[in-house]
Length: 385
Image (cartoon, rainbow, N blue to C red; front, side, top):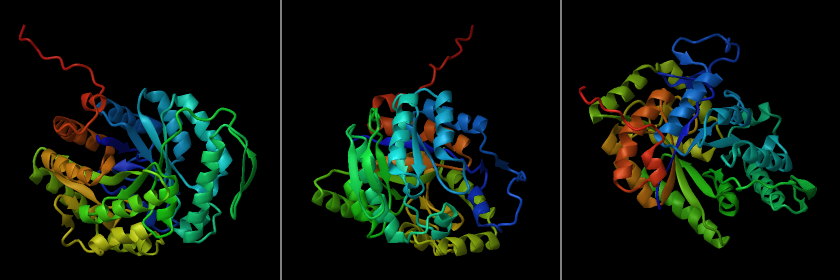
């Protein structure tokens, strides 16, 4: 089992700070006003990141979904025109789109990009966010609807007329005239009791946030046992940030700089907002640091500082290139195959990881040959003449 490396597209903005904190600011601020040090998520900048990821050997890039970012479908299909091989892990919420339409969109996307679509199904753990999109179901009901949604999507992809009668969807003669080829892999996450069975029935890759290895092992065992009952095999992935440098001291200095940029009021506002989330995974992230700046290295080279102000993935691998590779190898030994990574700023951190960690992983035999080789031109060395 080799490692599959993916990067992240910051479609809500990027910069040398944990820029997600704007999501917890007052609603009456002028969000259109440029903020010093923050890079707008325009197509030119995102294309730089996508091209860098492709050249460095990343297989795909994850694009988020939600109020504070650009639409993932539209943004990534545009970026597909700027890249050649890079795949796009498109995050979307089942509750705001018809499953038959989603199946059709995926089929079109695969033809336009020649098979470069992956799907990240986000059921949603924040009711306030869901209501912005007209979704008023409760937490467990949303997972029940996702279960039906994915049943319809896979049924419609069969190429035959498909009927479905459920509590949330009633479909008569659902069909994609030309099913996607290949079928997009479905990434899916969720830590609650309601999420597990849905992952077992439908996910190709179960994606968890970067908890300490012992907790990740527990999740893998849980989902694997549920999948066994369904007669299915599920693969596993982890979502992490990275701060990788030539030395461990340099990496921790960068982490501390990010931490020093956060004042107490910013952390308190973020923790208050995140504490209201219904997401079990989010609550597990918050429990790793308890809202405190103290003892943020919760496992060797695993730093929880990002989660002080950022929702979702809140931990980072911090250390020398070899140390970060060690931690990836440790997760891989547990059964983790896909690593969805990011860093601030995303353009520079892609190069730190791609030029520092990827060669180390390749030397350990953990990468497919194509990914290990990268996509750059041969290095030209001056001959002295």
